[in-house]
Length: 354
Ligand SMILES: Cc1cc2nc3c(=O)[nH]c(=O)nc-3n(C[C@H](O)[C@H](O)[C@H](O)COP(=O)(O)OP(=O)(O)OC[C@H]3O[C@@H](n4cnc5c(N)ncnc54)[C@H](O)[C@@H]3O)c2cc1C
Image (tube, rainbow, N blue to C red):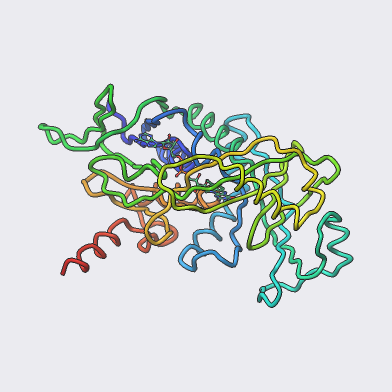
């Protein structure tokens, strides 16, 4: 039997959407090029930085709604999958630059000392109410939850093209098979533009990160400055990130860049400088020409796109899934997604020609 929906891409965006559509009663198949959940969603730090001052204003309603949804989203994933997501609600310490205007009042030196004694600076430190998750665990939980809910997941199935066949049926072509479906959603992250027939202007934005273990310097909170962030994991690792680079699909990890990130982290939390590097990696964030998500109808009837979540895809996963599911069912999305429509790029192209 043909599925109601085929989703290309089993990262956190595709998996969350599959779960939401399944909840609405749809028969859903995910096709992933490799192993689901091993690309950007595996590389991410997992900060749910809904209140970040640098967040694009158009994203704020989405980010706020996502942050509200997160506890229930995580609870649902953990219940369905029996996999934990490493959620921590302790908050983040933001270290402002000199003369940087911040919405909140800085903590006193005493408060900083009590909260995070390892910080080098005790002035200009702001406590942000913020949650974080372990994206590797979250994505594994979402994958298991999707499978247990009846979503069919195919690994090693790279979608090459989506088109109509001679019988006017929508077909999704991989190297080895052709699948007929009523609806198709492109959730291929940084690779969304590679699917023929989709015409999605996604672009990869590389991020390099490392993790260290520093037993002498246990960190409780996310610590963030304009330059670098540190994210403690429940198992004692501390993640340090991240670069934002425009280098195409290159995922090379550069030792000099990793050393630089490690040094910047040590400038904030000196004890981290003594930490042993456990792992260093790079991932490709799904970017877009205006750095905003691309969500809405695709070029062909019955096709849709949900990508371009750039630096906030872990945060935005539950709200994107809900809004796209509503949109695909012809309902009015709870939050307006017009600003994220793929059609905005079409308009730009046309006006450049005329
Ligand atoms: C270093 C780094 C740090 C980050 N930190 C954070 C953070 O703290 N908080 C936050 O909210 N976000 C963060 N992000 C961003 C976040 O990781 C992404 O926005 C999010 O993971 C995007 O999810 P996705 O499912 O769209 O893409 P991906 O996770 O990349 O998934 C895309 C999937 O599509 C598959 N695919 C590709 N092409 C095809 C094809 N042709 N056919 C079938 N399948 C295909 C891939 O195999 C992959 O599984 C970070 C990203 C990076 C790189």
